Length: 244
Image (cartoon, rainbow, N blue to C red):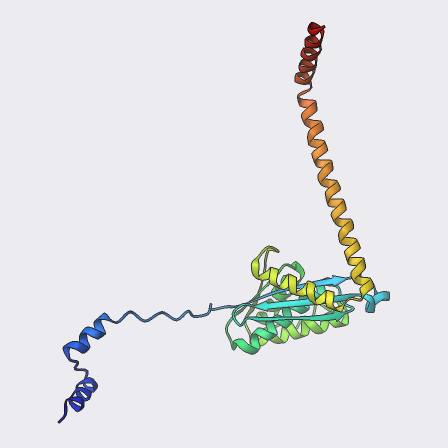
């Protein structure tokens, strides 16, 4: 029997030569595989142009966006005739639905800056757990009710929770920029110019407020140090008189 055949037989039996054992001992530890977090995170945000009223429903343009870091999914969309709160809710529901299509049955955490959205997520979660069909959203408009019905259907099959997130969170900032960019693409040139004008007016007002604060601080300092200023002025006048 050749040496190669013997070596293969020993290896199958778990018997190694001294050189093979030295190689196995000196081999580095396997690199641990980075597993994704247990919960899938969905960050969402919305942006709106115009003030919603029943008479100008089609004039209101809004956008929504969501970001799922675990799957690197970024998506935005345009909706007309929805309030900003409804757009925030739509962004969260669409993001949760996108996560369920890729996620399986892992828990989903939705992060939003809207207390209205967080309320409805927690409310429907409670209703599903208690197995109640109480519909307390009938005072909402028709499209918002449709969004809530979609959310309730997701709650029956998936574990979804909502949490508030700060605006300066890195992942939430991604959604915010995407929502703003999506909205700009849908606006007409006149609407874009009005946004620019409003932004410039806002900047001017902010600069004015900053200057007023600085002037108020200067006036306060002068009032606190008026006696020192008077003494310094008297010393200056005395010095001028001595020079004469």
